[in-house]
Length: 108
Length: 116
Image 1 (cartoon, chains in turn brown, red):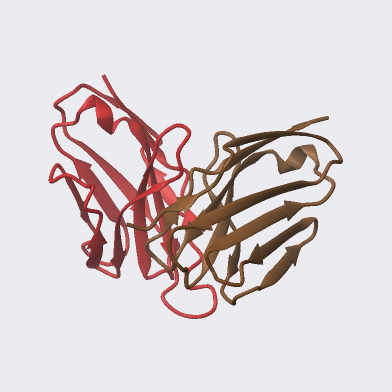
Image 2: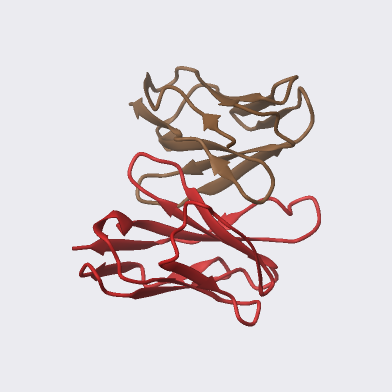
């Protein structure tokens, strides 16, 4: 079955540093979504990417969908302590398959 | 609060007992999903409904699990003869059926189940 992989599972950065994480699918995806889950919270939708090579920005967050639609990246510029949480990629469409997520911690 | 709500938020039960969880989606959302999440893992799809029709059920879901959405509004998830391996956070989500945001899922706070 379809697998969505996120490696590594944990990353620690100093506040102000940039952060990039990747998501890889075993199959071509029609779309990919990113969610953020704060400690003790529930997943919250961040973005959906649909087109090959698509790039979307949300303030300090930049999301990209690979040309082959089998991978995606999330880049955070100048991390802040509010960026702490677990970031999941998931796809496609309604029956979402989530990756294990990457848990980001930020040292103030 | 017009978000997705779930009840109860926490449930502790003994092995072998039956439990039922409720989810109230965002009112205008046609689609409703159930997921299970354990520590260190992403949410795992269980089943989803469009209105009252159950469109898909995970092959990983044993026959001890059943979900209903009788009137196309709230949904219930029942687990019969609970096992310790059922201990997890059960998440409900809802989404629209059409429009640009139709695949964006809004999650509820979850029901944390502990089976002793």
